[in-house]
Image (cartoon, rainbow, N blue to C red; front, side):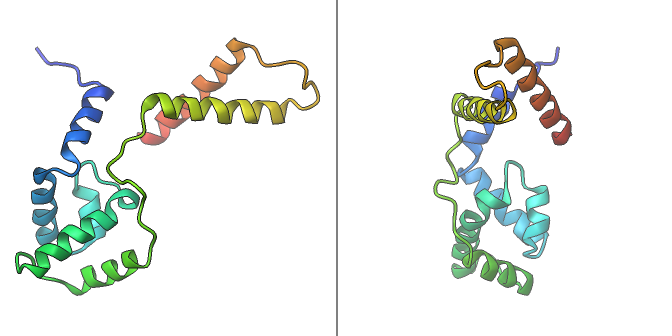
Length: 146
């Protein structure tokens, strides 16, 4: 019997994996496999996002190069120089809580609804209308992920 994997299972795995020794090992192996091509590495590295992880991965790889564990490549050096000139994320390992995301979503949705309905500003959208709009947005988001 197969256990159904839930979004919570994936989030829990990701929270444990990101920043772990397993992640470091995978990063170094993929760096070697892709000869320092970080764009290819990000395509094959699980739970990785270039915007969140580039600075963190650069620090790990630079340390391994400094210790002689990995060899630097021209493609890596070019990527590393570009990353060095970018602002790092404030807390790359922190996952935004679902409740916080939902609260932000509802706030944005209310703001949009009030701007769209400025003529009839006295009439607030019903709970049902908000629910329908939220479902439409979530289904669009789900389609984009596929």
